[in-house]
Amino acid sequence: MEKLNLFFSKIRELTFWQRVFSWRSVRNLSYDAFEEFKSLQKDNTTKCKDYDELEKRFAKTFTKNEGLKNNIVQFERSVTEKNNDINLLNNKITDLNKSVLKHETAEEQRRKDYENRVTKLNQVMETSEKEIKRLSDERVQEQQASFEKMKRQWNDHETTVQQALKMICQNHFIKYIDKVPFRGNPDERDKWAEEMNAES
Image (cartoon, rainbow, N blue to C red; front, side, top):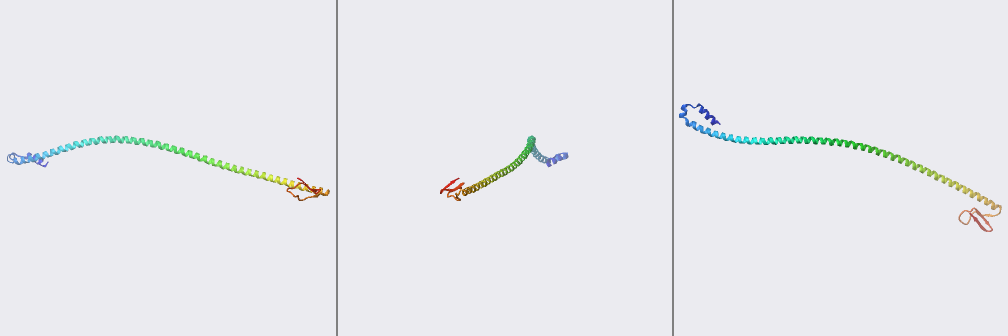
C-alpha cells in the first residue's frame, strides 16, 4: 500500500520536465505499485472468499441457533409439563399419605378397642373362673359337710344300735362279741348256742 500511495502522490506532483527527464523512476515506481496492487487485489479476493465462507458459516450457525431456540422452547414446554405432572403426583402422594395416616389412626383405634375388649373379656373370664371355683369349693365343702354329717349320724346310729344290742344281750344273758373274726362291722353280734350269728 505504501508504494501505491507513493506512486499516486508522485504522479500528482509530477511536472512536465520531470515527465520528460525522470520518467524511468516513475515507471519503476509504477511497476512496484502495480505489483503491490496485484498483491492487494489477491488479498482482497482471498478476504472476499473468507468473507463469503464466514457468511455461509454464519448462516448455518444462525439456522442451528434458530433450531436450538426451537429445541429450547420445546424443552421448556416439556419441563413445564413435567413440573405439572410432578405437582399432580406430589398432590396425589400428599392425599395418599393423608389417607394412610387416617387408616393407620383408625387401625390404631381399632387395635386399642380390641385390646380393651380382650382385657375386659379376660377380667370377666377370670372373675367367672373365680366364681366357678368359689361355687365349686362351696359345693365340695357342702358335700364334705354333708358326708361328715352323714358319717356322724351313721356313727351315732351304730353306737346307739350297739348299745341297744348290748343291753338286750345283757337282759337276756346272751354273750355280746366286741370283735368279730371277719372283716366288716355287723349290726348284730351275739353268740347263741355256741354259734356266731352276725348279720349286717
